[in-house]
Image (cartoon, rainbow, N blue to C red; front, side, top):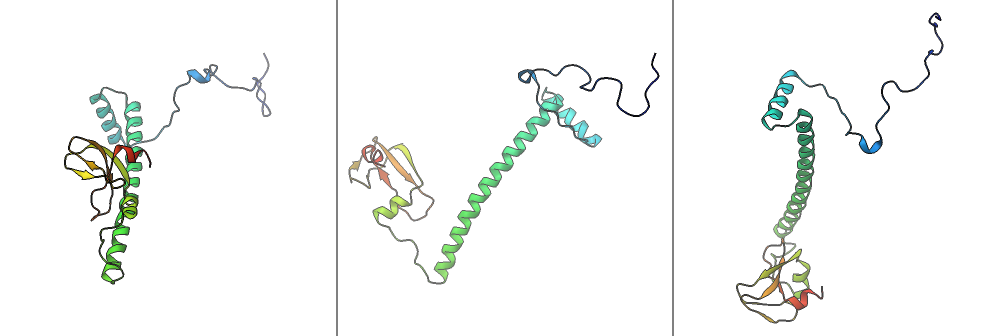
Length: 164
């Protein structure tokens, strides 16, 4: 038997210890470890048991839901900030006398204010803003959706919506 070598390279061949790695398509998800206080561990185990799932699955769900929630809050917050800023600028300009309150706009301006078109069944008679055709109760038409206040209802008939 050879005496153990001191210093230098190890006597065993270099490489990976343990079993051979599984093929890529058979591998499980990645593992992330984190240290948590004992009371949090207890809470996680109780919540997982209550939901009849593993702690790992519970933590994965919580993380995914949290990121989704935060993304939605950020998106909604930025839209809200944009809306409030726009409204504040309008109010400030009105106070300074730089502009008048919204007046009924021309056809082009009204169409520009529409953010989306909603396919609906008409209940109250109206007119298509493009061709002027009468829209009767029970008829299919498209209602313009807008965030601007003071804009009258905007309607398009089925024929005119196809021209957009």
